[in-house]
Image (cartoon, rainbow, N blue to C red; front, side, top):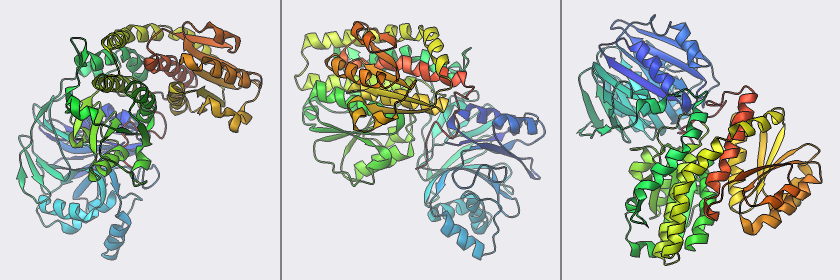
Length: 608
C-alpha cells in the first residue's frame, strides 16, 4: 500500500519522482503528490486520482525545478482521499516535508498534545502529526529530531524527509513498512520497492526496523534509533528491467498469467536434484523433520487459499495435521504453539503487515517459522527462522496469479519432502510425482492458449450480479481463489462454498440463470459433486464445470465444461485455477474495469 520515492543528486528530481511513482502504481493508491526543493523553497503539487493527473499538473515534472525531492502515492487510511489529505505534508512554516507509508497508532494522543501546544492541522491524516512533531523537536540537527519522534510514535512507518536548512540531505526512516535506498550515477534514491529504482541502480540497501539513513548525492550514512552509526550490506538485484514492463500485453495481469509456466519451473527446478527433493532453505535435518508433529499455515488472501490447498496435500501425503489461519486473526486468538510445530508464513511481498505480526507472535511463543515469500530481502524473509523463495519474479498486477502458482509449487515440494523423510513415499511414487511436476509448465501453457474459448464464455456474463463457486476438498480451495479473482478485479459479487454445505442454507440464493462454477478434480468426489451440480441445476442455475479430461460423466450435469489435463490429484489446483483466472480477467476486461489496479485494493498490504 502507498509508494514512496525520493531523490537527491545532480539531475532534476521531479521527473525521477514521477517515473518512480509510476513503477509503484501496482501498490494501490487514490492520490499522489511530490515536493521538490530548489535550495530556496519547497514546491509541492498534490492531486486526487491517478498519477497522470499529477503528471499533467506538473507537465511531467518540468514545472518543478530542483535536484532534491520526495514523492508519494497514497492509499487512504486516516481521512478520505482528497488533495489536502494527499502527501507530502508540511510543518507550520513549510521548512520540513514528510511522506509516510504506514499507520501511526497513537496519532490522536499526539495530535491532542500538539494542538495544546498551538499547532494547527489542515488535514485529517495521521501523517501530518509527524511533520509537526519534527518541527517541535527540531533544533538544527535532523538526526536528533528524527530519533526523538521515533521514540514517541507507535505503529508502522516508512518516511522520506526533507529539512529546508539542510539543502543537500535527504533522510529516510523505516519501522515495519518497506524501504530501500541506493546510489544512482549522479545521486541517491529511496523507494518503497525495487521496480521504482531499477532504471537507476541494481545495488540497493534494505533498511531494517528503526534504522535511519542520511543521503547526499555522493554518500549514504546509516544510524540506529540511538543515533549510532551502523554498517549495511548492499544487495544486487538480478531482475531484468523488462520483467517489470508489460511487454506488449494489454495488462500486467495477463502477462503474469503467461509467466506462470516459468514461475513453476523456476520454483521447482533448483529443488529437484538426482531424482530427490532437496530444500536446503528449511535448515532442518531429516531427523528434525521427522520430529515435526504439526504444521500451522498463516497467510492472507490468495496465500491463505494456497494454505487451504496445502492442508490437504500435507495431510494426505505426509500425514501431518495442519491448521490454516488467517493472519489477521491468528495473533488475536492466543494461538497454542506446541513443541514439534512448524509455522509456515506465506506472503508474496514478504511485507504483509498481518502476516508479519503473526510471525512475531509465533516466534514470541517459541515457534519455528519458515517464511515462503517472493521478494528477496523482505521483512518476513529477514525475520523468519528460515526462508524459501518462490522465484516468481516481480508481480505488478494487484490480483496475484503467478505468485499464487509458485506458492502452490513450494507447498507441493515441502509436502513431498516430508513424506519422503517419513517413509510414506517410495522411490517409484516420488519419481511419478516429480514427472507430473515437470509436466505442469507445458500443461499450464496449453490451458492459457485456450483463452479465446474462455473469453467468449466470459462475454455472456458481463452483466452478472452473482456468481457462485463450489467444490469439495482441494476443489473447495480452488473455488475460494477463483471467487476471489472474480470479485477483486471485476467487482461482480461472487462467493465460494464447500459444495456439501449448499443444502444448509446457501442454496436458497440460487435462482433462474444464476451462474455456478463447479470444480471437480478429485476423482473420489466426482459423484458427490455431480449430485451438488444437479441440485443447483434443477433450481435454475447455469453450471460451468472445471474437471479432469477423463470425467465425461460431468456433461450430464453441466451446461459448459472446461477440461484440464491429467496430473497427480494433489497438483490439480495448479491447472484448474488457470481457466478461473482467465474467466475473472475477461469478465473484468469486458466490464471496462481497471484490471491491474482494482479500486480500493493494494498489492502490498502494509497496514493492519
